[in-house]
Amino acid sequence: MSELTHFERLGLSRRFAIDLAELERNYLGRSRESHPDYHHLAAAAEQRASMETTAALNEAYATLRAPFRRAEYLLALEGGPSAADHKAMEAAFLEEMLELRMEIEDLRESSSVDSPSRATMARQLTERTGRLQLDLAEQFERLEHAADAARGTILLSVRQLLNAARYLEGLLRDLRAD
Image (cartoon, rainbow, N blue to C red; front, top):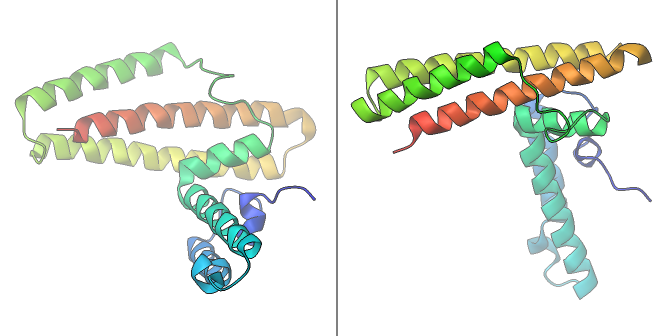
């Protein structure tokens, strides 16, 4: 028997665009069924299986509810390149990230965590990550309908979007640090 995917484990279709309310319902229902508290009088093997099932459900839920983690997971399932396989980013993007990092360092040195200038920068970075999520959704939608010849290009595009998201998440983390 093969291992279930996170999507199968939570009764969802294998796609990027998921219904978060359905994800939550399915997770809670399956968690209740398998939670170790309901199996504390069972044999040791059944208790162990319950704990393993609960751990797998928790991991599936954590992965699928976070858009970028879900995209990374789905990209791997689809056979796309990992971050280690494809690190290249456009020079203009890297230059922009360096400029933003310097701007964030200046903000951290000159303003408090709750300053308006930091809030503005956080909002801009958050909006940009939101646009990346929309771009990912579009690429995964294209992938669902793509001919085999186009899949590689789309999977590479998804990888590049995820690499960009990592940069932006790092900048947000640095901005909020202190």
